Length: 398
Length: 107
Ligand code: HEM
Ligand code: FES
Image 1 (cartoon, each protein chain N blue to C red):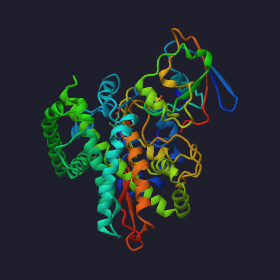
Image 2: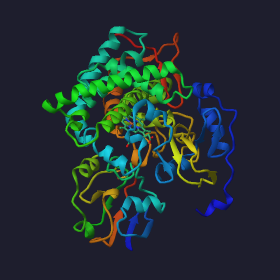
Image 3: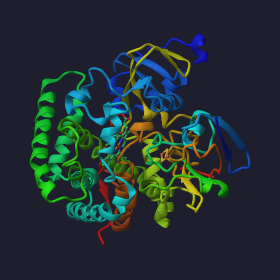
Image 4: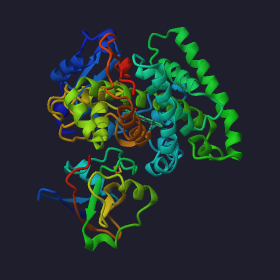
């Protein structure tokens, strides 16, 4: 690139701490973005990329910005999945998912299953009564049960899926090398492998529309199937749960927008898109630089480990006016919450259908005067993954 | 080289000369032609590369695959008989020039 000569050195953000990021990363992202598109962040041991432009460039250039990270904790926790491969290897794995997560299958198969699951867990929330936590009584089991059936784990429970997902995610983030975290993560790793070994022969004889059924009998190495299943457990459960929680919280905190949506339920897809823009459920994901390069004017050495902070890019004022504000009426612009390029989220349509198509409309239709609980404030937390950790709600019993 | 003409919703026109084998989406994204997003990088997965191909070029296009067909039902602007995904149409052999109209919005 012609700007090579003018490349700026990357500033160090030694003022950033993990604790602050976990509590509320957005003021940190704003300060970083205003200073430079890329920082070296000692606390995270990575370069953090926070501008929309730079994140977008990375997503679309897998030759310079490889997903195949060396010493990846994700590879250790889950195996070498498609998410850590570049094309052409990535493409083989990705194609092995076939049409299972695509709109036609959702319409023909999954929507009815999502609806049944939403009915089931909404009944559980109602039974728990006003004051119950919407995340743990509804959103989490709903997302987990949907994923269990999409994947074809007929020999596991939604509670298993939740445990597997959380413990392996903790492994991918175990930079402190905590042996207890590794032990829990490895236990889940082995449980998932056993569950796959048990269910594949069953699905060969009793095929259905699930991912594992499609993979049974496909000429793809067992090692790849196992890694891709673990990555999908980790990437397909917490994210729909979290966007659901954030969307409810945002609407309940913005009465005018809530009234607008209640009067016009066709706005739920806009609520979904604005929620994932405002708080990206996956706030940061890694890439590695394959050769000395210049990214939006910043010099990066070969081997540099990057954090692509889409949670920050989605609040870049160069793209989104008044970016810190939740506003379902903002001009529509493409956000980066689902990533982009060859790793663009394979489950994006599943998330939209299950959350915007079914869960949100049903929650607001069946829980009259749904509102936050003034006595028990909601809690949002996290940065690599961010969502509601507590969302106690009240409603009027019919 | 092959020629692609993009007619924007507002009336502006972008004309590109690109290598044979380039998709309309890739041509637009690498040359900064607004109006095509291409979020999924060409996997027929995002429906943000929707174009309306001008009548006279329709017959020269490849068949619409099942993946493209279902995704064309997910575009933000209305699907018509001229609708295609820009990532699934490649210029070159049999199509050394093509002209498309861009929808007002992709998201
Ligand atoms: C709102 C919900 C979701 C969000 C925000 C989200 C976000 C993302 C992001 C950012 C990536 C790319 C990461 C990277 O490039 O390193 C990704 C990839 C992926 N997601 Fe999602 N996801 C969501 C829901 C789901 C669901 C429900 C599933 C499965 C049913 C799923 C399955 C996958 C898979 C398999 C990949 C890997 C794609 C590849 O490497 O080609 N996601 N997701
Ligand atoms: S680029 Fe995503 S469908 Fe064409």
